[in-house]
Image (cartoon, rainbow, N blue to C red; front, side):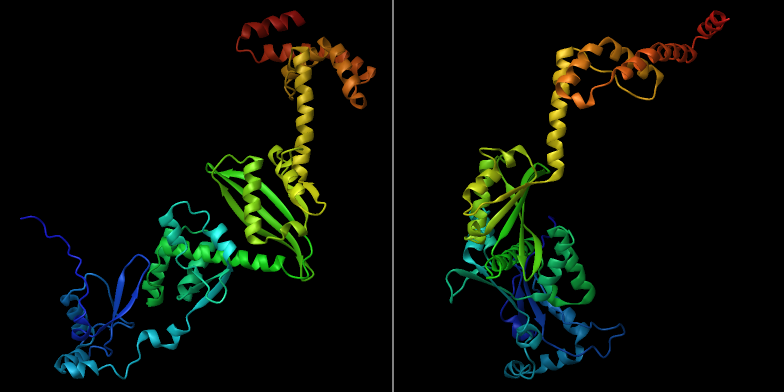
Length: 431
């Protein structure tokens, strides 16, 4: 006989009255939950009874109801079974539904975000229609203001716990598992239904709310200027443009991380510029009137004289903008210039300087190199670096010690040789 397949029995409405259950909630992935309405422990039970409310999920079978009711509520279940249909309907009149309790009715959190932030920044990154529909599920167009979205979080405990976990760097699926374990350990039904889809929606809500706060700060009457700082990098094959905004608000200077924008094309200056302008226009349209500073990492893509990102931003702003490069990249440009000059010298001499270390052999080869190419080195130093040109005394000392160092090099080489015959010949020659 073929093995029995697990049947996913759907909930029957007639079971609400027969087994004293009521609808509880439906999670984001479609899991329907019902709760037991009976109260009172099993007086004949030897083990400790459940301390929380029991919840049913599919499959919804009569055997599952009976096992719980007879095991946890034997006295009230017996009384309920003996009652008539009309008596069963009035059996729970004295009880308050879980959805009407103060704990559940006040457990809400509401956010209000500008439509441009939601449409362009939050929803604009979703290229697939179905994915965008899931992304925008919690964002509802406000009835009072058509240019704003309203987001209502109906389960504040689950939302705040999820954001705490995400904030310390835990992945979405790991957060969902952690919340499930917390629900089981603490017997807290309000943590039911967490999954990676809901967590993604929560994160988008938090990002939208944070951007809304930054927009409000930039729009404050006391804020008359702002500065931007950008840096582009690649992480695991994905290009990102990191943008920070610096602003003085309430007599304090803030350096806020604005956003890390993923770039799906090569991060050329033109692509970064278009993406940045689109983002800033959605966040705070009058940003051009308040921009007075722009700093970058000094990369050629960022600081190009004609088509660099900073150059484009400066041309877009309505006021003169101070351009700032970070110190390490300025030093790096000087070092590259010196290295290029050294490469040109090597090309002209058609020879490379030996490595300088504390070994006698390396020091001997270096002095031999200096002696052989003295004139070329002196001409280069006089033309390009006259302040660092070696003196005649230095060259005299170099030529004087070169034979001594060379003799020491030969001696050390022979002494370190594995052939004892060479050592004997050395001793005989000295005598």
